[in-house]
Length: 570
Image 1: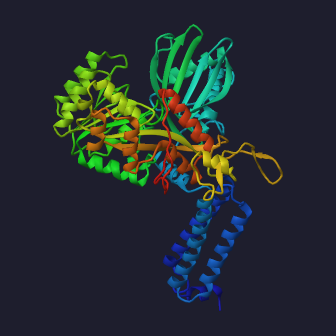
Image 2: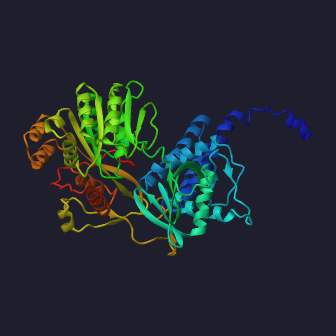
Image 3: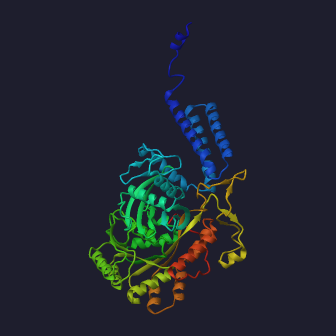
């Protein structure tokens, strides 16, 4: 019989089901994509690449074998899917133990956003920064012979390494013969490179043109903005330029509009501290002093506090000297940095007359302003006041000095919060060591309970052949991300009585302990015990913070500590 006749008699659809084939193909494609991603991720996460590939491949083969030998399509399909999910979960569990999973959320978000973004017609060399002008159009690299090519290359030199390392700020400062480039990551400055003055001037002019600034004006300060993309990550850059006798300098701030977008849960507060603050927010009246040394998270805490109030149900107004970012649903009133006391008081009175439910001011200098705020808080409103201080007791002292009358200063004061921010060790390359018992005792840490701590590595990473490697998590900065440490004093009748009767700081510290509160150093050492940071980082932060505010916070003996909850970059 002719083969065509035989084929014509085959009942199409009874041997192969198209609808059952589709889920198999989908699962196969997903598993292939998973294997490709894991193959690249394992080395970056400092996990054995070959062993993980063998394990995942074996799991995939096992899943297919079980599918082929089991009866019933959907039961077999379910078992195959389960085996693959278990294998993937096993890899993620191992990764979590090694470096965590926090970075995967950002990878996934960037991947999703990549579908929404229109592909750019302008291409750059691999590893270079793609620049966008003020209008959002990509800027192509000038031809090699073009006069502006040298300036373009200088901009690439200035931006590439700092952006790849997650810089929050980049400074180009002219000097004699050359300009220095520095960048800041997590509050710490790093030297980048030196540029000839001609190249530096060209780079400044190039980015000024991107930001739409006046190229002829080289003395007066100017501010603008533009975008840049590196390794698929988009960054918003705020540009500030100014002139001097040495030449034109520039400062670039990255993602300035979102740097303080943190909730209370993301600041690093312990569980007990978070409960105290949330209870205070719910109460919604009285004055809360929020304090820290310079560059230690004061704005982030103030913004997190006012965001914890419902901006759609509550009328919220702020007065800020040099506002850092726009807050949705919140009215922000700007006050010049050099505003006089009279201007400050007039602005405070003007805002109070508008009767907001929540009022925040990031600094108070005039006693008359403080008196207005105290009276306003007495009417059942919530007021947040920022101040620079090394600890809660110094913040209280600052407030008493501004007000000038202890009874009035304590009248509606409800809580004092003081904080610092410190860097977290890179989870991928931190180094464990056995601490010296004598050193632990000096820091009120229990040598019988602590057998291992971590510190930043001092030697480069190396592969099996001894070749140096770069850590893809911290880019060899040894630290990655920041978290906050805080101390809180609840101002109750007992605290008010001590202050108004002329009591001592030691009496206040006794109440602080009675409230089961912990000092900054105790909070920081909890992070050290948990392996999140190092003793060296704690000493750096506490010393720098105390010097910045001109005082110190004496640590007391440490009560039992369960450590912080929900630590995040503050």
